Image (cartoon, rainbow, N blue to C red; front, top):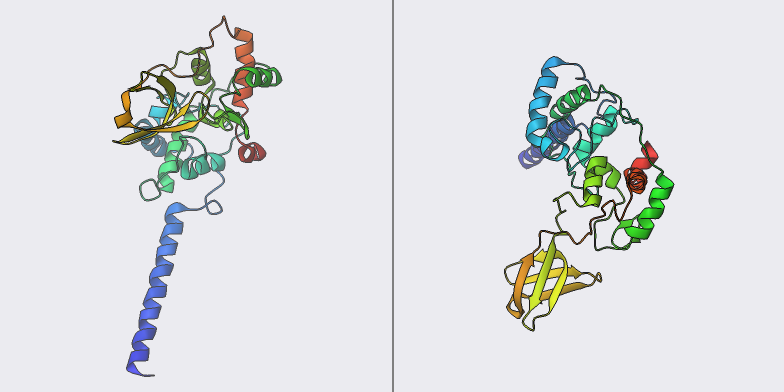
Length: 277
């Protein structure tokens, strides 16, 4: 074999070895759906629970609340009582939930061990069985179709002025949903911030902001039309504090009807997740 052929063979072997090593490292780091354990290997480990508590406070409490009972994100303490598994919860953290603010965990910053430690901590908060859900989901769906579907879409049906709610049961706790319906929550999902534009002719246009840069703004108006404007042609652009969603107080929606509506909304978890439950 010539010297050049030997060199080429050596370089090829090194390249293959590096690629295999990188793949093995990635597999070891990230695990993968097939490789990760079905049950949390760190459940009940005191040190893991302590580490997981610190990571939860830093990374998760802002959405799920300091006690994991939900804030902007869902109540995690009821997950296992509702039939959830360690493997399913791991996959939610690692890969995120499509259509919600729950993004995938960056594998270069959040390792499998970190996730298992956080779940070991959350599992300690789930010792108390969840209260049985109340309300009539069938009636709740009827209430939704009559009052909400003109702005919100579920499984491809409904309006687009408000967020798609097909997976809202995975993304929001019942208490958070109730606060939004009653109008007591100040949280507005990004991409749906209310805005009022004033043209140079004095016309006022209200809708939700979709895109904006230094020179222009794009909104969806109250008739669900996407409209774009150059800021030089506007007399004013105001980001409103009041959501375009009306508040449904007890005078508009009785407590019993609210209970039914919430029962329906909490069942909306997307077709894929529902099939695995």
